[in-house]
Length: 366
Image (tube, rainbow, N blue to C red; front, top):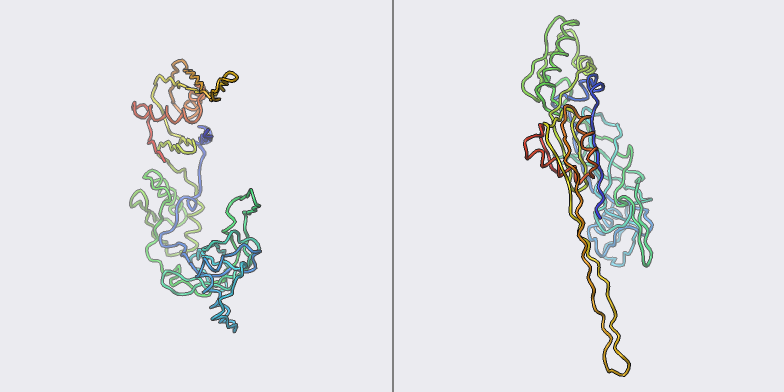
């Protein structure tokens, strides 16, 4: 039987009236972003949980190349049977305007048939960007949150033991081209585009700059972008820090998100339902097989046979018609809970209400 989980996320009217956030939490400066790095390396020191060299030829080639650089000649030796080495893909995010000598976190993922990276150590690995240049060097102990244990008849696995993380495991060696002062036009980009939110941010910034710099510096370009003009009497970094701390109340569209696979229902604060009558019922069919043994009489030369016996029960469950009307989210949730439905039933009812035209919100089905 499938097991459903119901999640109803809502904000009360008293809380929603004061739900203000900082501008830097809902918007970011255009052009200031992370850069992704990738590298190929080896994890050593595993407890017989590494790659099988016969099946992972790239692991054997990488191991031979590494030993060759260290002055150990293993070419022509086909008897390498070590299980303590695993080939991994190393990834990292390089923050903007980072300088050489800064340490960043790296993620390590197995490429071969290794069963676990627990206890392993990543050997010196170059991390390159999309331009093919090396920007960081990674090395260190791999932290694995999962584990795997197996016996002859049973195995236990928790989380993913073939992936790990090395906190501060990479050392930045090259600076990304471009500096903050090289950014021309300052533009804020909203993480959740909305016209109302953009206008509120512009009003908050202009109210601040009018009081402190006697000028208006912000204008909305669209539902995503906000253009800024930096005052001459302040630096760009200080100016962005000042407006980033301003408080605004973001707006959000009325939306219901449904994940039918897990039974998750997320209802936004502004979702409303016109008055509708709802009833929900289902039919349960239960089939029971009870085999009987037919035993022949003594000396009858008959054969013992198993005869099937089938019993079919049909049960129909249904409730009275309930009136559901949602002037606000609390009323809507209370109305759905009064019907006494499981998440599967709530999903079906919300879809039917949307079809009837009574759900005044976007219905997103994942």
